[in-house]
Image 1 (cartoon, rainbow, N blue to C red):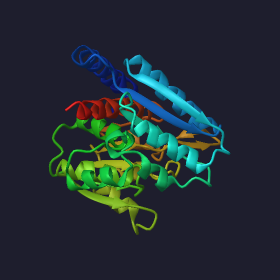
Image 2 (cartoon, protein in one colour; image 1 turned 135 degrees about the vertical axis):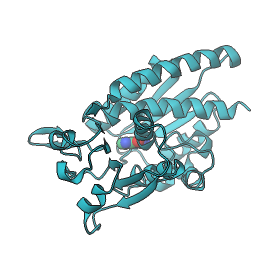
Image 3 (cartoon, rainbow, N blue to C red; image 1 turned 90 degrees about the vertical axis):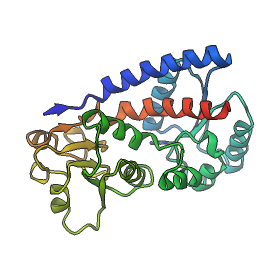
Length: 281
Ligand code: GUN
């Protein structure tokens, strides 16, 4: 079984991006800039944002985190986003989710100009992705896609099963696999026989938030299995895939942690650089 080392693949990608930033700096005499807006003091968000900032600096991006207390009003955030939209030194804007209840998530997402939407959450980017046009692609599914391609460069005709239908992961993941000519089945909590669906799959992407849902006998020999889940349990951090069981069957599997997580952040940096490049024309 191949243990898909997300840490290592992400480090390689960061190295490539660092080189690219250095070339862009020579060519344009400026570097891509990423601004992250963080509202409130939720511990997981703080950790994510710190990691994003650290990685951005490591590859040579200009990075900034703007923090607000969770009592901040929606108008202040929307005004700040508009200011960043107009700031030519900013290539990418990310508002860390989740948001406090009094702030309308969709309004926030739609206020970020699509060309700086490094999350790929704006309806314009969602539409462009599903139409097969150039767009920002949400970082987590993009990271999953790059790992799958490392294992299997030619995905044409493969059967893929995506477990979970979220806007963040399942839906964009489906689009990326479709673009590669996979036959994709998107499954979710109302799917009748999830095990039977998974048993058909050459590729399984589990992004459903249920600890160790995908069992060893759900997985065909030689399947590639990507585990997007991060679930806190009494036994520590586990994914959506029963790792020990599935590792006996699968051809390749991502660990949790050390699989998808590091790739998500590296892909955010990639998206920031891609937004910068598109803005230079
Ligand atoms: N919170 C957890 N994951 C994400 C993500 O990919 N983007 C944003 N903006 N917030 C998140």
